[in-house]
Image (cartoon, rainbow, N blue to C red; front, side, top):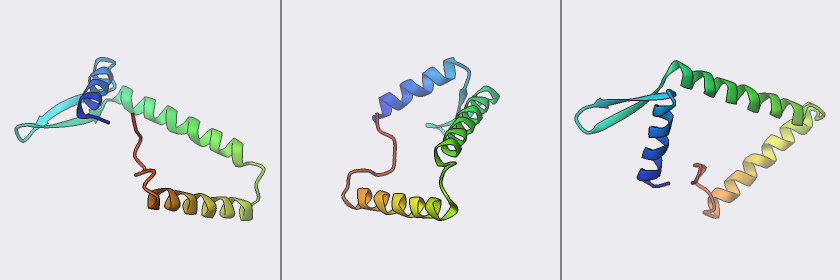
Length: 90
């Protein structure tokens, strides 16, 4: 993701009241979540956790452990192959 794309997204989030920018040490800018931004993150995280619970509710503890191991191995393989650096892309 380019610096310009990040800047545009931060500007949009700032206009919507989800973040505020603070200048620190000259040219550095810190982006901080506002209370409204925190609320959006919490709702999103809650939704992800509910979906995760629904998708895995039929699995035993042993199956959950196996799934976690397989997903960890899959992610390592993807990283080793250079197909992901585990950061979201634009």
